[in-house]
Length: 244
Length: 221
Image (cartoon, chains in turn brown, blue):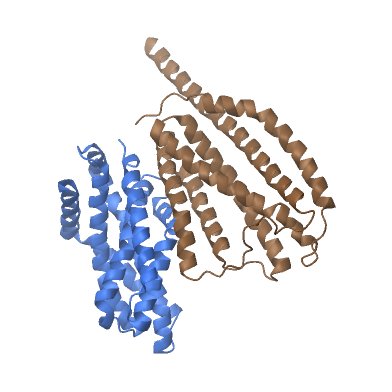
């Protein structure tokens, strides 16, 4: 299966989304910061509770990144279109960034609330494994020669990685992973005045994710085009040499 | 089906003629067991039984990593991999043949390692041999399924010896948890823990399907 000439649809959408996502991000970030500063301090946890407005949203963005990696990979395998691979690659890189930030912000909160940096909790363990799996994904890409081959290998690995998340959840739960991590937020689990900053936190983080993703897709598109031009120039040079 | 058997037969005959992979894996696994014995000496029989399931599977996984890496390295000689890719058969069946050969070779190494392990740690594995073999087989099916898929990927990357464990270990957790849990149940009470067996069966199913379908895209040339 040979990769076809890049279909610019994904790149075109990315270019069109660059400015709107940047404006959206700037506006939301300002609003979010204002609401976070004004949000009431938690009676039990104190100021450290405000990490809540950042940490879970980072997790949502990271999971979205990994889901997009698998979807982009699957579409690449199905359609053979480089643009989908660029989406998968970009989503993995941005997903790892958000996942790293999430893994860094969690322990700050845990230290303040649980009294220790880390616990081998169900969700923490799976997230750490996920982070390692996608680091391996990025390493696989950089250690594979030939862009088409790297794209195929990475697509297969990205899909396998996503398939293992529910298995891991099931596995660690069965083996008695203690659930120290707070549960998902229910409708009324947030204190008065905390809902808005949390909602804005989610929207801002998703806007940041979207903006970084479209920029990354653009960069990958430009790289692909450069590589194509270099290839064409090399071909022309060769022909010139034969002609003289 | 004949493709699966042909590839299985080819790999086993190749292995039988040289026997270098199975010997290397076994010696490596024995050394891992001995190193573990010195690194984590068990003070009494109860502690040995507590440590045994995890340590036994560590030795198995290390041996498997070594063997899975060789499975496709062999095919690189004389460009046999291109031949496999061009074979007029569904590549999923090529995968099944290779995975089955890996499973047989790993199984032989595991049986020998279990004997050495029982001696080194003073654990009586003989009494539960049959059920232990079933658990080990269930764990190894999942291990060999993704291991064969990632082995085919890793063999064509730079740093392929490092690449295989990097790819495999983060995704191997459900297999390891299920297998260690089931082995611990056998050692403690002599009975199979159905929860662990269920986990292994589900994992084998998922890994088998993903690898069977994914292998199509892993062979090229």
